[in-house]
Length: 108
Image (cartoon, rainbow, N blue to C red; front, side):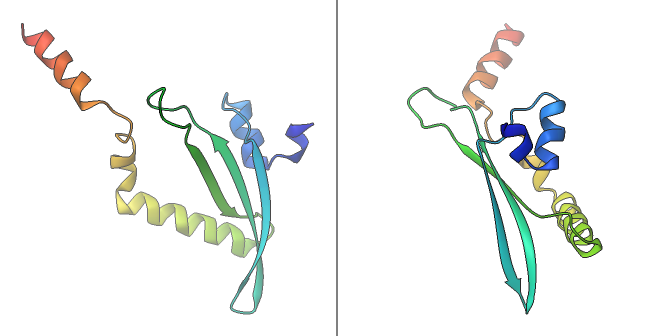
């Protein structure tokens, strides 16, 4: 039943092997006199350390209901790609101490 309530993007990611979001919200926002529908999916992450709480990842995007929404989503995605932030985000959960240990073991 949860699959029927999930967004198309969440169902596609689930088909590719990712978990479904644990919650979904639909917000309607007034953007300069124009009402825009946003889809918000909440995903549970895995804690980096057992003592830490599990992170929550939030995916917010305009609902694909019009050409303007598709343009907005594409423009935001291109802005993120051009910013270069995706290069650093892949290293957020890395463990520098473990990497240093692995490098010293390889040289010895």
